[in-house]
Length: 155
Length: 155
DNA sequence: TATTGTTATACTCTATAACTATA
DNA sequence: TATAGTTATAGAGTATAACAATA
Image (tube, rainbow over all chains, first blue to last red; front, top):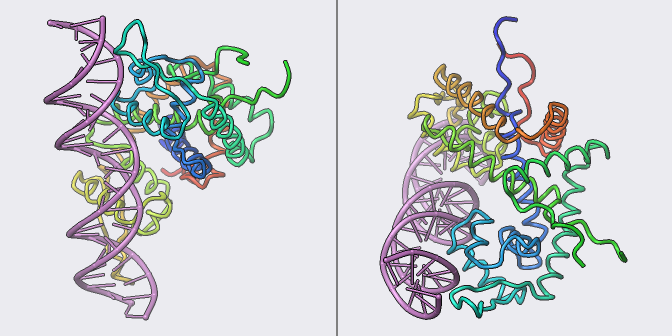
């Protein structure tokens, strides 16, 4: 064999994460559909729960989406009773988004459904492989500035 | 601490793969932009190279997208000179998509760019962690029926 | 004048459905 | 009549840009 047979694109991290991300999101979307939720909405709830941001603008930055998208996501979640908008009395331009009890329940519900999706995705992995995967993805997420695990024990 | 503080949604495999997939795809898209390519087009080239399918219809199934999307992706790639359409002489309804030399060069180019993206993504991982991650993702991809690594050595 | 949130608009992506040609 | 590919159309999702309220 001569030169470096370059590693195939399909086994690159970027490609694998991209394709598996699509699959994972599709399965998660199917799982939460019965709750009337979509992945982006759950992402907003999770970011709120993680204390990632208070105002809508900060939230849009934390999620890496346009501010206008946060508005419509918040509209939908407010209609579901999952969160409330609270005006900042100090700076009345700002709206804080706060989870309601319903929102926390929905989020816990989605977390349980995610566990089921996880089980299906990782069925072929040994416990050790599963843990190594979880750990590595956690590091990547932190490095990429994505909503990390909630600070510590909350509640 | 009382009951099972349920594992947070943000650390689930489904959520992590989804968000990291978005990040990875965005970075990869930025990297290949100068070649006039988008991730889905590269995905088609990779599927072809992996010998995943011959006809356009089979390809659409292998990629999990609508047949009409394969048509437009193939149109664009044909315009770039990356592939040719060849009529099946036995069944003249079928079109085989075959990579050109240009297509193979583009693909190799993208693979190299993906390596750079990978380096950025995995910068915080030790070599052992990196390998464990690659291995686990490979298993997940195979399990999910995604375009796996090319069969063996091809050239 | 600058900033937060909102609304209006437009663009990209992708799927569904109708159509053509071969079988 | 059924199937491979194509075209036409429509929908979802998201961003950009204009606007309103507050600072």
